[in-house]
Length: 77
Image (cartoon, rainbow, N blue to C red; front, side, top):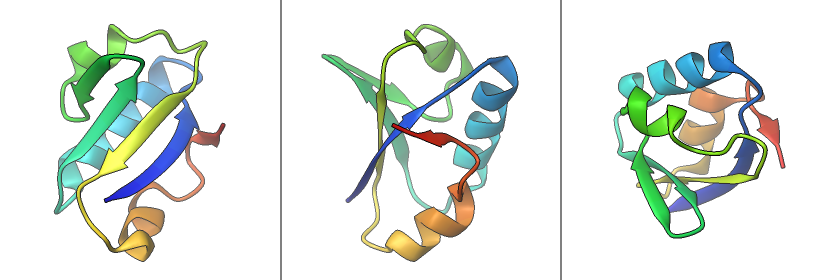
């Protein structure tokens, strides 16, 4: 599993993140505290507090694939 801390800085970034998760050949979750949200759930993403750091968890061991898919599009926290 590849984990990375990110920050979403607005609705456009949340939509772009959601679209990237939809294109991923692996499952992606966002974790914030006790909450675990499916990256393909736009309503779930909107329910999170974007002022705080989110932990992206990609269900793959291929860090290069995660980097290629998500790249630097989302602020590293």
